[in-house]
Length: 312
Image 1: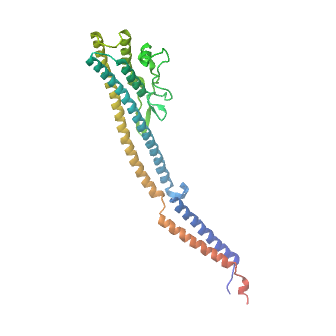
Image 2 (image 1 turned 180 degrees about the horizontal axis):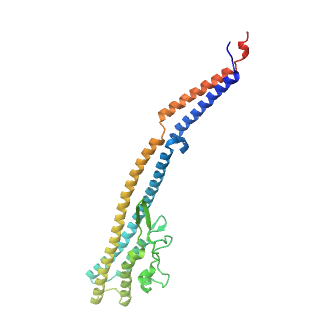
Image 3 (image 1 turned 90 degrees about the vertical axis):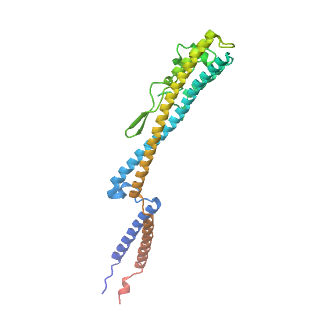
C-alpha cells in the first residue's frame, strides 16, 4: 500500500519552488547588471582580487583626472606666457621702428597697449582661478594702484619699484601626477614679469624726464637703444619660462598616455573577473523560469490530491 504524506509533498515542492526563484533572481541580476555579483560577497574567493583591482582602478583614474586638469592648466599658462612674451617683443619692435624713423610719434601709446597685454597675460585665469598668483588663486597676480590718476604706465612709474604691483604669494602650484611623480607646475607672476615691468617703468620715467614725442634726439636714441636691448632680454627670459612650461606639458601628456594604457589593462582584467557570461546568464534565467513553472504546477496538483483517492 502506498503512503501519501500531503505535508511532506508540499514541503518538498515549496523548497524546489524557492530554490528555483532564488536561482532565477540571481540569473536576472546577472542579466540586468551584466556582472557576476553586485557586491564583494558575491565574488567569493576572488573578492580580494576584485577589491585590489578596483582599488588600483580608482587610484589610476584619480591620477588621470589630475593629469588632465594639470594639462589644461599648463595650456592656460602657455597662453598667458605667450601674451607676456608678445608684449616684450612688441615693445622692442616699437622702439626699433621709432629709432629707424627718427621720430617717436605714438610710441608711448603703443607701449601702454603692450603693458596692458603683459598684465592680461599675468592675470590669466583657468577655471576661475588665477594661474600666476601662487597660492592666492582668488586674487589677481598684477594689481595697479588706484592712485595717482593717469595711465597704467604713469601709475607704475609712481611706485617705489615695479615689483610693488605683484600680489602673488610665493607658493607654487605642485601636482601629484603618479605614484612617484610630483611636479612644480606653477609659475609666479613676479618671477615671470619682474624684468619686463622694470623696463616699462624705466621707459615711462624716461618719458617723464624728456617726453618721447616728435623728433628723436641723440640722447633719446641712446637711451631707447638700451631699453630696446632690455626688452629683447626680457622677451627671451619669458620664452625660456614658456619652454619649461612646454616641457612639462610634454611630460604630462606622456604620463597621461601611460596611465590610460594601465587603466585599460586593469579594466580588461577586472572585466574578466566580474563581467557575467551573458549567454550563460540568459540560459540560467530561462531554466530557472521553467523550474519555477514546474514547481508551481506540482503545488497546484498537490492541492487536488486527497487520501480519499486511495481509500476503497
